Length: 227
Image 1 (spheres, one colour):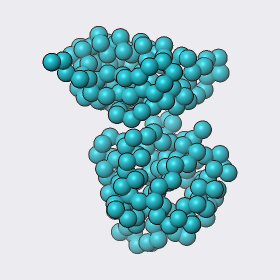
Image 2 (tube, helix red, strand yellow):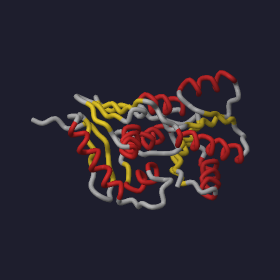
Image 3 (cartoon, one colour):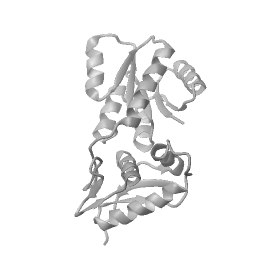
Image 4 (tube, one colour):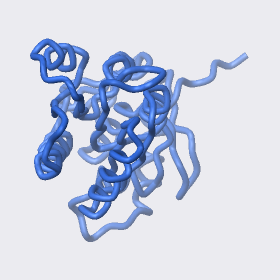
């Protein structure tokens, strides 16, 4: 199921949006200030994030800037009551992907979300890095102190982990993102490919590792240095 993060400080507006989004088939996490939005965005994986610009504790622009600086590439739609062109430019410069001015038609927001999530599923950066490890997506090679070739699904899984470095990813979330178009496999295949990648990270003497146990959550994080 497509998962959204909604940050809107007006409680009645938030409740109405959540109800419509859930009715439209989305899973929604709702928060009411910028600090909570940043914490959720940094620690969870979403298909699209929707931020009001004017929020307590931290505005939506600051949230987007912090997430982008941390390497998060999740699509972001900004909501604001302002209509001046300067605000639109500021939002896009901060790293937002789209912009809606209040009041807006709910159908338009749903269309923007569909567009953003389709784009995110097909987004393939040519190179992704975590620590000193680099993944060349096109060449399907993983390198640190040396290089190794990856199979297609290994590349796709490694890319997903590296785009969400430091985040806890459930087995089901990983399965849905990497094997979403395949009907002849189940979530048990995630553990098999995690094991493959652990061996290959070890082979290149990587400074990152995949933490987690079979059927549970996995995190790609910096490798603890030996004493």
